[in-house]
Amino acid sequence: MKSYKQYSCLFIAIIGLFVILNFICWHFFTSQSFEAFEHTGHGDILRMGGLPYIVSHTGQSPYSYHHTGFWEYLDGGEEGHFDIITIGDSFSNDGGGAYYQDILSSEYGYSILNMPERLDAISTLYVLNERGYIDKIKPKVIILESAESNVQRRFGGKIIESDAMSSIDIANLTGRENHIDPTKQMPGMMVRANLRYINSLYHMKDNRGVVIRANLICDAFTPDGHENELLFSITDMKYMQSKIDTDMVNENFNRVAALMHEKGIEIVFFVAPNKLNLYYPFLDEEYKSQCHENEFFDKMCDAKKDYIFMDTRALLRNAVMRGEKDIYWYDDSHWSWKAQQIFCDALAKELEKQVT
Image (cartoon, rainbow, N blue to C red; front, side, top):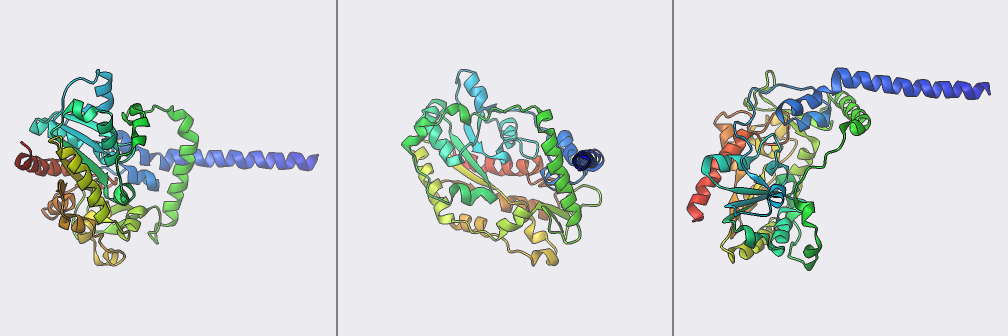
């Protein structure tokens, strides 16, 4: 009986120590990695690695919310037409703390309806078309977007219209936020964040943790002491070695472009560059030798296309070469509003040439 009580007390003591140490680690160290998002709307790489908040000297986007979300369109009785429909992932939906659509709308006067993807951009468009929304909204342009790292998974296989799409609940495609009580997430979130922080400390010397630091040959960011340091996820490194079936990707977009051309609608496809791939030419030789540049953009630019493909990698690299800083946020995998501005200026010129 005495032995049972001893083991019970020991077990309770271990659990108590575990809880106390987690709270100490969270309060003094790990919680700082969540401050970036609270203050700026970006900082996902800090959260991945449990790293402290580092201040960027580039402020938040000067553009206010100036487009319509699809759920707003539904709640408003599905009224009105829009010049442009945008469909994409986090890069099209406040990833990095801003919407590029607000620049197109504010600066160039386009009315924009944004549709967050719940399938992939092409399949989402097929659903909208099958349900009659494209004919109802009557856009002149549809912009489809994907992060570079997800192009193969989303578009590397054949995508066709299917009768099964008629069974998809349109409410699941609205992008309406699901509000979850953060207090219910807190214990698990705290423990996971602390483990990431400890992992980062363990791998600080060998630089093989979830988050990797690499030196650049130029100053590309504004945080003090980190101007020539690239912070990126280990998954970015893995992507650099991956293969993308650009022929199939191009075939999928040519097919959806042909369908939309029948309705007088132009398709624009752009890919948000992988952060490591974007800054690859600016890596110092030590880090550049550890991976090879992914050829996706080169192959897509050479492909025969019946849609507008925006070479965002070239646009943004040129900006880095000109000395522009914080094209992507230092602490995030997403682009900044400065990159969005460069993209929107180039896209507006392209639309002016090709869309009447």
